[in-house]
Length: 152
Ligand SMILES: [Cu+2]
Image (tube, rainbow, N blue to C red; front, side, top):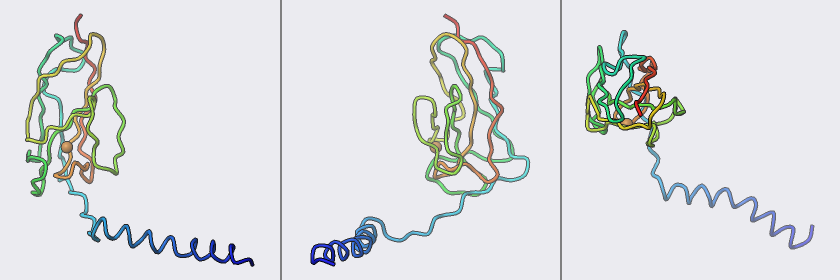
């Protein structure tokens, strides 16, 4: 082994150690909080519009929930959560906190309705309930998906 190779070996061996220390500086070790559970029979559903309906460009969407309560994001209380509206089948990872986007809308103030504006044509809507940390409950509380047509 040349001196150069030895030095490289030392650096390679020490790098993970250094990186793990650096990581510790950034985030103190916190125990991951378990996901909030949902009671049996818990359900979210879209009260309005009804599946298959035609709506105006700007239209209200009303959210319903059964066997659970609505609480604002950040407020930890058993059997509660806040609504999320999934537009046009936007994809998300069930294991991670729900991302925020134009097609994954959070209602973190505890809203139970919204005024939505969509482009003319067919769209799908789905409600997903999630806990104070925007994580889907265990078991998941997700509505059926509805299809609507937005007028020209
Ligand atoms: Cu959220």
